[in-house]
Length: 117
Image 1 (tube, helix red, strand yellow):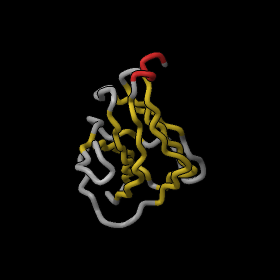
Image 2 (cartoon, helix red, strand yellow):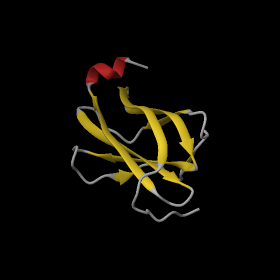
Image 3 (cartoon, helix red, strand yellow):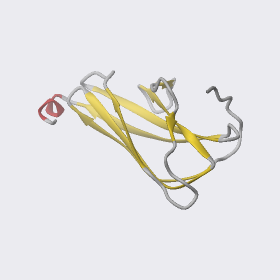
Image 4 (spheres, one colour):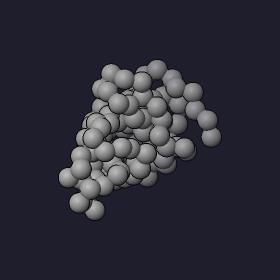
């Protein structure tokens, strides 16, 4: 399914959005309080906060919440290198194609992260 971005704001209440560096990967997690008419999510990565963000998920991450209940999500980004900081933005998409961008959050991979699981 293909969506064209429609300006506006979606009715997804984001509770948290984090990026945690581990050994050669970043765990991106987000939770929602509610998801009214939500279709799904896309994640974008850049090497600077105001950089050129590229989508890193190949297909839309399906929404699992509802208008009365949120959900928890996780995405593992393995296309990262140590000694770099990566920035992430989360895009939510509703049934009408409207999108809202959240973030950025960042994670810095260091050699010390090599000893983490």
